[in-house]
Length: 89
Image 1: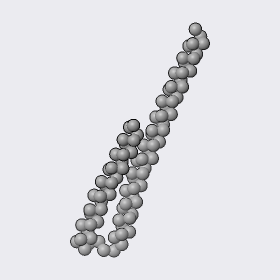
Image 2 (image 1 turned 90 degrees about the horizontal axis):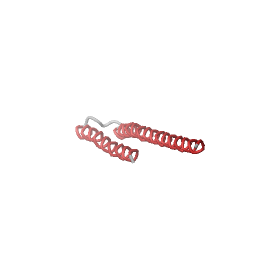
Image 3 (image 1 turned 60 degrees about the vertical axis):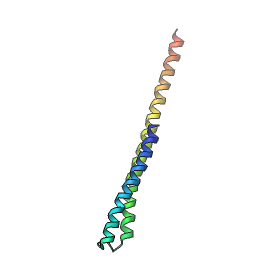
């Protein structure tokens, strides 16, 4: 549940980040200060923003798997301890 919330939050923040970043390009274009290769510059910026948030989502996924594995190990350890206790009694 936490992992899904973080993923959704990252997607939302990424969309806002892209929108705000695009506003700068629009302002520069309207003022005539950005004419050369503006499409290429926007794409590069969008790719770099996307790479950052993709890394966040990948890290979130890895942490989620790690935590799940640790919980499973803990549960396996408890089950083993219970079996050993039952065998000794």
